[in-house]
Image (tube, one colour):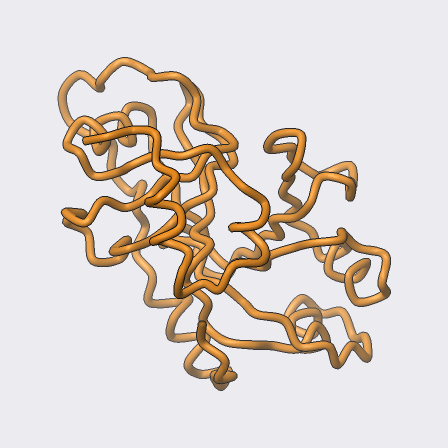
Length: 206
């Protein structure tokens, strides 16, 4: 796990240099929609051809006929204080607690998301399954800073997204394994060990 705290310039370069994964729709007829992978891990196969996703584990937040959305959970970029994160949104709160910040994927640089345990809920919260949910809200960060947030959480910038049929095509080309999500892996396990642990739980063989 990365424990160094990068400067603002390094973080800005990371966010601004990301490429949009869903910039273009796949050509030809897309493969048929498979069973939804919402609430599952998407695990990059060792043969993954895209270096951005090498040895990544993605928690799938949405997967339906309109496309797919997930957050990479094993690419920490460093540590920030909650006060620094809130200051970037225009909210000034004395919140010195440091938290790890993750690269969630190559889509929408600068957009922040909080993946968290399901007992916490706001109007804008999107449920994932009975154990996890996601909230993209400055108010959720304020709640965390004030000790009123979710019991467990992971903060990520950017996300991984697919247009309809795109993820199915990548899976047909054997780019991904899948496995049911496990909150312990999402929030507790060392990030350096997460890909191996998720691979050990895979249920889809190539």
